Length: 269
Image (cartoon, rainbow, N blue to C red; front, top):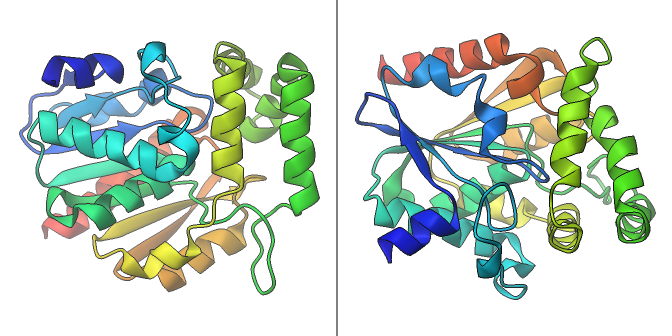
């Protein structure tokens, strides 16, 4: 079983420390996106990287449409990795949708987690009465429809807008390539699961201490989302970054590392 889980999610372990830091990538990405961040923590932590099934070098044969029909299936993968590696006091660092996936895992098995660090999180992407998620429902339906009809064109248009760092076009190009290298059928389902999710009702169940990292200008998770999360997640901290776009771990790694280290240092004092 251990070999199967580690192979399924292409789990990689580095670092010299004992306390585990588990890094979880966002939609359309893989573990390689964390390469600017993890070296800063390798001396003091055990670094655990993985790919969600359907992403990176995961085992595509393990993809199950029913299991991954909602975020709970991805959270179960995280818990299975933690169980197989006997990980305790985990510092979970999740980008984008992985923030909510990590939260669901911590709600289900709080004894395994010390902290949940959320990079660009959102509890719901679609606007609702009294809630600004950033998108009208029609926008999301149109986005999913475009993915189905012209996946490559969708990726080439959306990835640079998500990255929002025109002075570093290579980052947008990398995200585009990552989107394009993902199986379009799996990507379409993961996008639907992601963008139609609503985890607002789960926020108050979260007991694990958390850090919400909010970018100052992010089309995927506007500032109002960070404020909403902070108000509704008990024992949470909110830090608004100077970084723009939705991927500060790639576009502003120094600031991202500094904020995470500052948070962990405060926890240890």
